[in-house]
Image 1: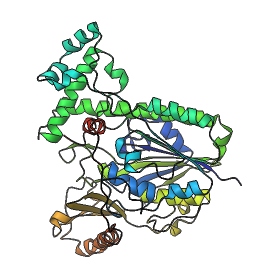
Image 2 (image 1 turned 45 degrees about the vertical axis):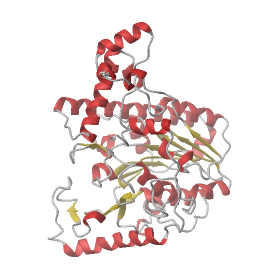
Image 3 (image 1 turned 135 degrees about the horizontal axis):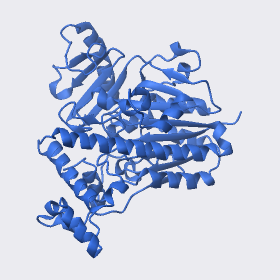
Image 4 (image 1 turned 90 degrees about the vertical axis):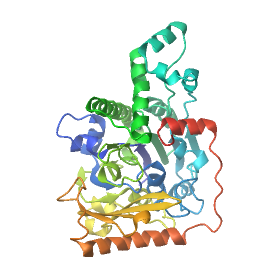
Length: 454
């Protein structure tokens, strides 16, 4: 039997509760719903990090974010590379990245035969940089006048939209050699949520600049959102979810016309969720290790089809690459921390032994670790190491009540996993500190527009 092709689709910042199988009202993800109805649906998948830099090392290398010197700079060459293993075993590997944090500069091209950093080349209008310019950009009349004189006042796009990404993948698929492994990252559900269609009118552009100012006040200036603004942001977010779902549907229909489709595995997963003021922030503030951030949607379409399976058991994005390697018949590199998920749909669920997940927030001066079982979540913070918290996810799904005093034995048991992760981080620390290059101005501007820096 020929080895399968693999399409790994990662969607930045997609909340688990926005997918159709979790919504009681109208679905906004019909294409992903259709994929789930014919594949393996994981309803309790947990990511390894609270933001992109901490989430992707577990997902793509099956190692914890804090290992091998941490996750802030380029991936350490000491990390095991499942993608290199695929490449070395005859797979044609290609990557499409839409964020600087997952670019060649950060080492994410390792193991890929071809790797594309899909940058927009956009720059903000000059008026933004002059005194009073941002105030003018929040007024409709400014954009009406700029249209008249032919001056672009749209905010710079910090990422290529999903339709462009699908166009690039489709072109690549036309000449793809099998077996292939292709990874594509979509950013449309990441702030600032503004779809191109919404920026064509002067009113839409004025609203967009008002949105950017409001979010800056909330996340950097200690401001707040009123109910109307919050609802607007939710609606913008959901529109972006609809858009990326439609484009993934277009990609799947493209694949379905290809003879290779029958033998292609498709995985769709988010790197982390998005907070809608549950903890007084908007976005994915790193210190949030609660389920609105670390619980993610995940669905797999198996090669050659299968009976639909719903897996309600907790699983980890840490397990994705071991699963891919097993299905592709490739030996796994030493040092992977995850397990294959295949027993969960092949009739041997007891062979999947992971009963806890680990999610991290890692910085040079601090380390937070959440250890989650299906019932409890234990959160440890190096800056408050004597004050961990414990939540009962069954009786308190919003994670508001610390029950550590009532359940000391459970807290102690979960803390053992914290110690295990700390030890792995220690023993894999490189002897020579990696020297990180300074971020170039264009990348810095993109990171600012994405909300990562002030």
